[in-house]
Length: 215
Length: 152
Image 1 (cartoon, each protein chain N blue to C red):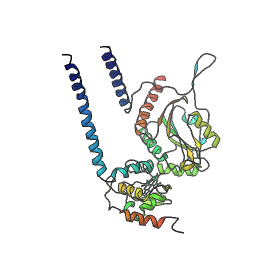
Image 2: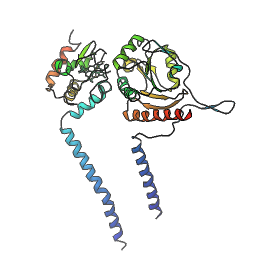
Image 3: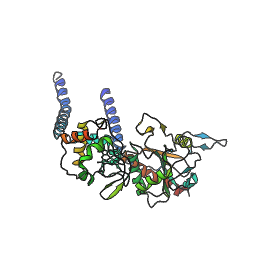
Image 4: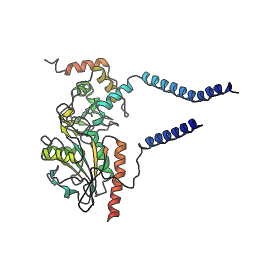
């Protein structure tokens, strides 16, 4: 009797787990997104969240891109390089999906950092942007000081590095990072997995709604 | 009464075994049938591994950055070049379906002749492409022509 009981509970739990893993493939409609990164308390006892620090990079139109560029906007950030022989075109194809999906939503922007700034100078980024048919008003491909780029990558918890043993000479994760209007990271997604990019699409909507109700 | 109980137990557990056995048989048959269809899946796996990141799952490429393979006139007009493009990459301006492309495609030096052949078969017969098949002999001959170590 006891054994059967245990078995029944076990199969129930297993069944529930199975259902859950199945569900993970589908887009989850969330009402709230977490704030990622370490939290701290200030002297008043308010929670201090991890935020993206100040930066200044040059985009494909030679415009300086700073946090002010994204004021009042949520943005999706990633790391790439134009001569990338591996996952970058795939990431860009997925980013293009987002870019097209939110084309009528001025509160959504995109920021792609080159981790090969020596080669990826403004004219190279300009040519790349033209091939992707993207506008610098919504999607910034940026280059800049190498140490600054690698240090901003760390603040996204991105593992970018120069590595002569890797195809193309650099490693990076292929992740897309979702940043809110207060420069906080609210999610990260595998940029080569269409299902995760679908989830990101839904999560952007959650952030837009959050900002609307905060006003 | 007591002697019958274990028997009954065996029977009920068989109910679990049968559907599993049938499922296993079905999976085995399917695997055998697919293996028999010849190279298609091998070519697809190679494509997914070496080409899909750029040319995409649907073979449509990425806008003006990566040219399409699906419905690409280039595959017909430059048919003889395909093995060399796949193995040694491609640089410089090209025109595919009337559109200009100019972004380097990296080489895939690790691919064997047979792998190049399988990939070509796959791209010649996917996404609606229906092209005159290239033979393994043709692939070998083409690769010999563009092999940089043989050119010396």
